[in-house]
Length: 348
Image 1 (cartoon, rainbow, N blue to C red):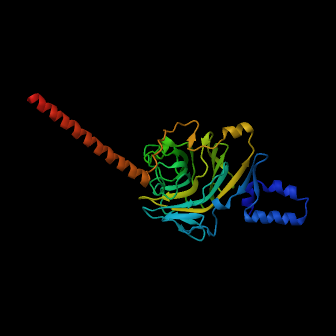
Image 2: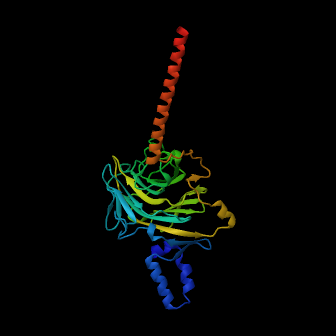
Image 3: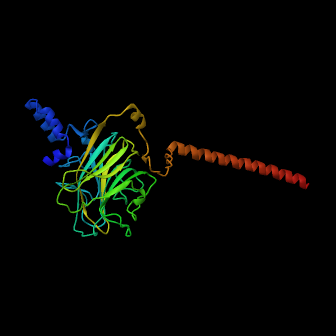
């Protein structure tokens, strides 16, 4: 309980405000705190957080399943356990994912991920890691930590195995982020270096205390922080201004194992809506976007695919093509007959 209060940072402010009031209001606050509802101040005078249950996941995982009423869907080898959702077991060649069914239309948000990576592998004999997604498409298995390549949106990767043998600057496990408009491929051989926005070392395997990652998106500003030292304090990892993410994308998390493996467990996902004051100038600058981009990073332009033809349009194209072909053949025969007649006259 104390760790949770220290993590939130809003307890002391609200306690002082309510200390002079009657006991019933104090009881109401405690009930709200226990249920995970109500505002939570992030920075004084700037931001308040509101838990969004339709985008959140916690024990006993009642909203996970395949029915139309489920808020979260499992994919691949992912399994629901009593204390966590296991994306992949500590076995070779497994992949699994967990996807929210509800698109997120919030402008400013914060996603807190409580996870655990552990296994029998020693030194570098473990892999490959997990990813957290905010993407246009969902439930598409692929090679990028269990998700599709050339995705559209944001990917945050907790990479536990170094594929690039000659690299010496990084210590793994390593956290990195990537924004994609569907034109870029994740470079596995170089651990995603060519397309990453930034990263940091995060020793997260086989720890005996809780590990957390938070993704915060406020006013086109992307911030990723970690709490992996057992101190209940956020540590900066990635900070990138000018990140433009469309609304209406899906949250998810995925993992994959190959020749090396690990248990990749998700304990909770909590999404908070951030209420942020904006000036009129900021409102104009922060209009909705329709394709992910980063102000200081040039992404290749995407050519939008042509929409598929309807049955009527396809029929009309075939019909008029046949009519044109018949018309061309008739005209050709008429011209050929006239040419033959002229040739006979010249011969006689």
